[in-house]
Length: 99
Image 1 (cartoon, one colour):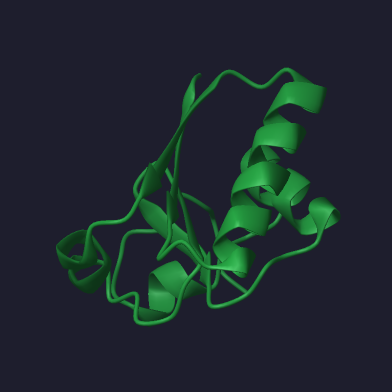
Image 2 (cartoon, helix red, strand yellow):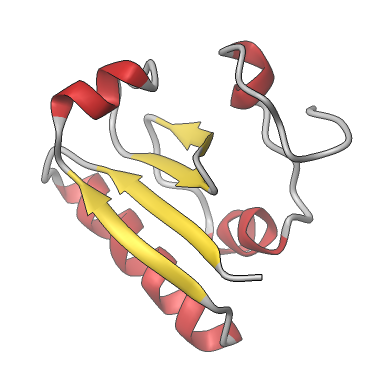
């Protein structure tokens, strides 16, 4: 199944780093994905993202406010690493449990 990946970004260095990291991981692992960088503040606010960068996979906020490691990104994209922000922010998590 093709992943819908969004990076909520204000254009800062951390945001650009996350964007490149995600693109590299998707390319290296040949994962079918649409990657979109979103700079729209209203979308950020609707997702309760006050600190960028933020990573969304299939419209679920996975992490925000930092640049995760490459291993974390691989886990998020492969659905091996469970999200914790979905539950915290009242979103439906696509995983069995959040840590």
